[in-house]
Length: 219
Image (cartoon, rainbow, N blue to C red; front, top):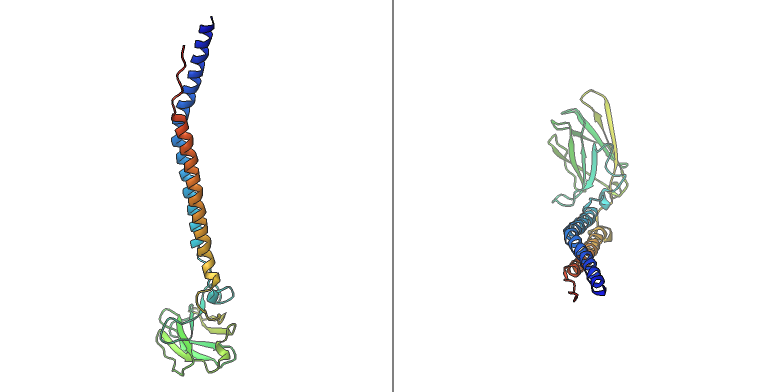
């Protein structure tokens, strides 16, 4: 009678261990897939946040113009260093007046597409009717950061069009503000990699423990 009870208990224990073993085997791939997907989503979110474009110091809020029709930026990447002014929306071939700060107005002819593209430099040059025209900034205060830039002319419909912008601060190279997004991205990727490593180690350990065969009971 006692032997029959022991055998019954052993059979129940074997069934429970077998059920747990089978359930662990079927659930392990799903858990691995879920952990891998969560890790990839976390890494993608961190990478996307780090690579999101942010406005540079020289092109910050308040500079440029109305509805992206006027762009005022430093032309530091070319041989002719100065303040570049680009405006659109004027009548083709019509005169456009440009004023920087308290300086006198300069007249530039719009190109066939109704745009003007000029560089304000410290050297005296003559404005032309070409796509790229040049004018002169005669004083240092005219090119100071925050100086108002006014561009006025007529639209193809004959209406008066006036754009208002400002001279941005000149970029002084790479600063801490430009390095912060990259540093945050590296830290986030490192944290995601560490989390994935610990997650996979935990899942693998649990999977190995389920694969262990139960000890055989003697009758």
